[in-house]
Length: 402
Image 1 (cartoon, helix red, strand yellow):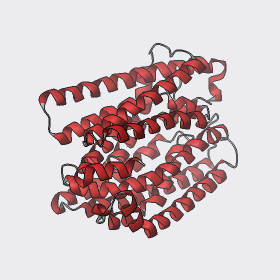
Image 2 (spheres, rainbow, N blue to C red; image 1 turned 90 degrees about the horizontal axis):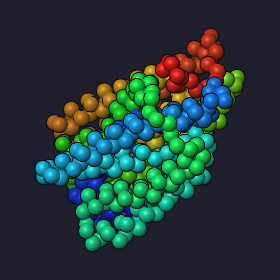
Image 3 (cartoon, rainbow, N blue to C red; image 1 turned 45 degrees about the vertical axis):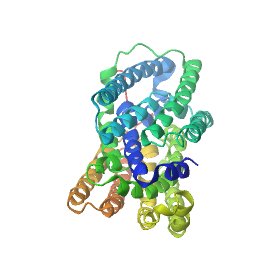
């Protein structure tokens, strides 16, 4: 419901500026949480922690909180400086998006996922989404500005963050004093690097291309991209939902059979969704964004092809590789995708065409998906010789090993 309102109030130019801010939002979220929430969530069910599980979790909470609040503080200072110095609007949108995304990532939602309490997680997020819609309806028509839309998102995330912290304090108590921050940083570095690379060519692409394409072109691209990413976001929770179960059964002989069955189901669902969106593209664009965005129809039809590929990437990186502790596989996949994306960006500097961004996105996603399928095959063949570790997740031990 928010997308039609924003598109009609801001137009293609305003939606392009908002696309820059929203791309920065995802990057900011990653900068703060390091992209390791699924790995940390899996540790909640780590049987290897034994009777000291609560103490280990609270120590991890304290270390993780110290990292997140420090990074968020740096982003906040940078944002204030941009306003004080009168930075260009594109830079202000990027810094505002970084801070808004970073603030969301100080939530304790990863603990809810680790406990398998997806109902509570969904309910807390719903509070923020309803608040976001209410703020947009009340404020945006009166102050039609892309920065206002991002500020509404920032303010609406406050109740969600507070609710997750209230829940974690009630369940686990206070976090311990930071002690092993370096261990968290060291073990999370490969995942963070890979996720950062993935975000820059995925959800953060608009921010990267903001120096090459004008705001109107980015607005047209964003129209189709928002619909595709919305569908993708409905498929992503499948991996999170299966993560605790996959972690508990990682030593099961049927682990890979169940994983491949779930992956096939995700791909089939994504393929059906892609076909439906391709057929309904004209109706969706006119219904959601209006006739001013007619030029986005063809862009949307091309980008729908990424859905099966992103379904593979999302499931493997969320529910399979974290269980198998394979941070190297994630990093290699991200590097491959970044190399292809960098090539597309270089071409865009010459063409200044939004089509370069769209085709580049499709090629990147299929390249990465192909790598992850190859990686799964490699892991399966390797484990036929060497059994998988038990318990499933031993990501961060007291000695800092991986």
